[in-house]
Image (cartoon, rainbow, N blue to C red; front, side, top):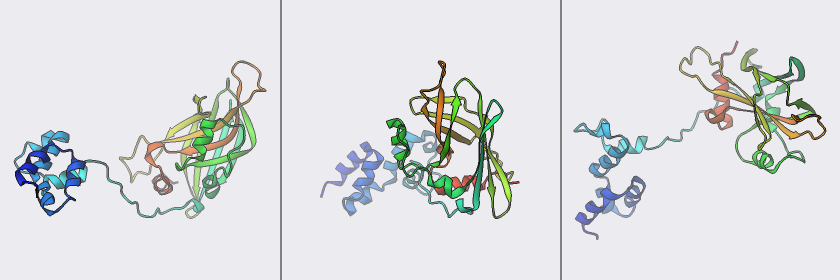
Length: 252
């Protein structure tokens, strides 16, 4: 066995992941690596002020570091609503003239593109084929958006069980156009129910997925829209997280 004094000289030099790996070598290494002094040294690098007291605020510094060294992946309970019970109302205007208006069942927004249309750029195709969670609606027939005109969107969502409606986006303009990704984007901040007073600054985004319309006249051109996509950025990245977020809206 390696001399205990050698281990005690080496362990303080290790990062947390390496020290944790040493705990798996044998019983001797585990007992030594669990000495709280080593974990206090690691905690002092991340939270110096918490190590100024003679005793840790938790039972041990090992427990403290293990609990908070990174964001823990938490398993959400099943959502209280489902996409089968939801219907999305999407309206898009150009200069106040309605060009798209659909009541979209929740499952249709989930289905998305079975096969992305031909003619789209490789970057957008890779994005649509990726494994990230998406809510996408193919647009048939397609519509064209002149670049020089103001385009706005509203999205409401209804619940079949309670016959209530909530607002996701309220007349927001598509004022950001990413020509490299072929997406025009609009956003609005979600309006949550009063029982969630500290939930704020979470944005809902609606994107127009487009191809360049080469037939358009003028320097500004137009967007040939073939799909509409909605997401909630980093706030909800899975089906379950999206449903929990929607459940928190101010339903009326």
